[in-house]
Length: 296
Image (cartoon, rainbow, N blue to C red; front, side, top):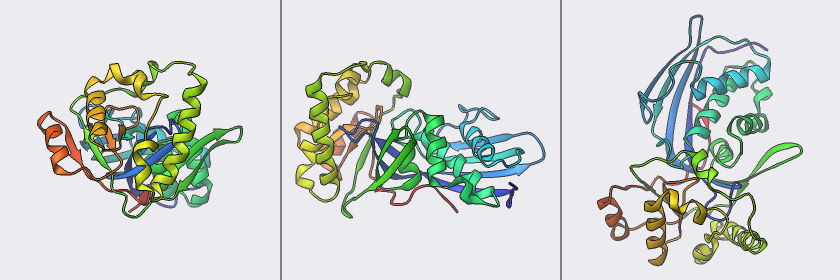
């Protein structure tokens, strides 16, 4: 396999996983975009980052986008080279908005763009590689495909499918000042849950698929959860308080991914948003990214 280009540029969206009850399965692509330029060079790998993560991320081979490009080229049997990486990041890091999945998917899509035969890295291969690097496909799927997705893993690997999403759907994301590492949020989850809680979430996840497709009247019931949010509550008390207050006011609010951001599956009005702003929350109305990672 040879490289047909020496430079590509990729845009990749932020994502929110779980959407309440759909733990490790449902995901949504949000209209907040990172833009990454990758150039194959003869010298050493260099990384320049502006925006989110600037000054805090690795500037060489350990950078996640670089690792993903390497994995993609290795999968295709293509030659490796030095890489010149330029990242303009808008996706907040450590906030439950899929920044690591975006980096992985961006690197794999960039590798595909460099190849003479890009079909070797089709969406199925990208999702499989991203899942291997990420550990689960719930954020990688919407970052790759856009819109709302359901992802699952079986003996054949990782899979994803698009979910119907009503054209009027307009989510809001509330981003706090503090961060929470995903592995910290996952560490507090129990290894087993009561059968009644699993059954509760199965019903709510099915209901959420209907709600996303246009049954807005079902959103409050459809975003109830018993599998993960209450176990993580003590690790992010501000998030717990915000979700509770919003839901008591009738807004379908959930923890975005592993948190600590909050996803509201509706367009939050200014009256509800202002108290959160006064307590340091950023209020984003990004819309849905109907298309996933792509070359530009």
